[in-house]
Image 1 (cartoon, rainbow, N blue to C red):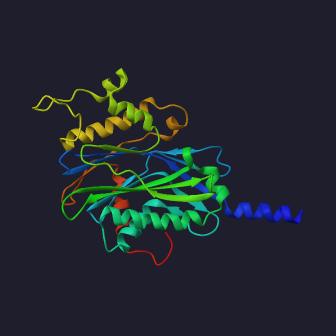
Image 2 (cartoon, rainbow, N blue to C red):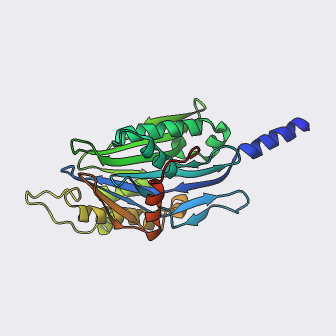
Image 3 (cartoon, rainbow, N blue to C red):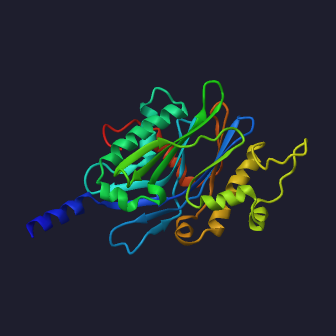
Amino acid sequence: MALLSILMLTTLFSSPTKVRRGSLVIAIVSLKGDYVVVAADSRNLTTMPGSGGAQPDDRACKVISLGGDTLFFETGHTYIRVYRGQDWNGLAVASITYRESKRHDAEALSTAWGKKASEWFNGQPKQDLRDFSGPNGMLLTGWFVNFTNDGSPSVKSQEVSYSSATNSVVIKPGPSPVPGQAARSGIAQDLVGEFFAQRTKRAIDAFGPIDATANGTNPRYGLDPTNDSDVAARAIQFAIDNSIGKDKAALGGPIDVAVIRKGGAIQWISRKEGCYEQDLKANLPSPTKGY
């Protein structure tokens, strides 16, 4: 009986008390490589013990500016509160990573962020990671977007997942889109794929007409940041409108859209007013400890 009580107490004080998850984010890299468009929905689902289920919040800031020359966004488990130790806050970790890094290129930032994620997730009970990992064991993906010194767009990500086969946390670089490509991260990716591939009438209707280029081709996106901002927002809205089940519950709210241009200038096409405060927080001095 005493042993059972100890085991129950250990579980109580190790399990997460609050988990925030969700997100769909799309990044479009221009054909010329002179800008990147990033768009995100605004819903988080928060699960707390005794809450009676996941609670939606449509005020989430999925994309933030770091130092005025870098965008960071994340999907998956963006915030995890634990009984003991430091909580996980992906945006805060990205901010600390940027401030501590001597190299602000996206690849270096992504690698440093991944190391911090590895330290945190490897320090958590494996049973907890097993319980709230998503399809294929996915836990979280973090992305950094900026331009290299030679002016090339750099979109780098780190994927955090739990492997049931090895009972361990796996951190690995995600795919990097090249000029002319659109990357997607998070949930409802099948719907985003349907939208961009124009596989159905509903996708064609949602995409809308796009003028052909002078040589008779129609790349649909990658030529103009205004058009691409609209396309990215339409893609997310398409997923919101047509998702079902768990994805339906996890998607929603206003769509934030940012354009980062060669040279590092960031323009917000649409954004919730409260999210600008996240940028200010992101550029405060690093805390002495914790995330």
